[in-house]
Length: 146
Image (cartoon, rainbow, N blue to C red; front, top):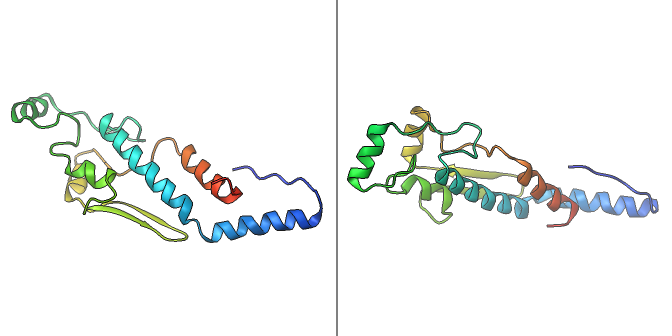
C-alpha cells in the first residue's frame, strides 16, 4: 500500500489520517471480503490441483487415478466425495472455520482429512501464491474505497 499526502491545509491532512485510523480499528468489512476471496482461492485450488498455491499438491499416482475411476469418485486431487473441498469453500459447512473480529480473520477447516492430506504432501490450507488481491482489499478499506 502506498500513502501519499498532498497538503491542502493542516486540517484536511489531520482529518484524513483520523479517518484512516478509525477504519483500522474495525477491519471486519475488509476481513469478510478477504474470507470470500480465500473461499474462491480454495475452490480454484481444488479445480487446479493446487496450482494457485505456493506448494502445488503432489499428483495422484496412476493406481489412485484408476481406483477413483473404477469407484466413480471425483478424479481431482484431494476430492473424493467433496467433504474437504466444501469445508474450505462453503461458509455454511459444519467443518468450515471462518471467524471475523474487528482485527482478525480465522479461516480454515475442522476436517480430519486436511491433517492426513498434509502428511501426504498435499496441504489444502495455504496462503494464496498471489497475495496482491488481499493487500488491495486492505488498502481499499483503510483509504475508504471499500
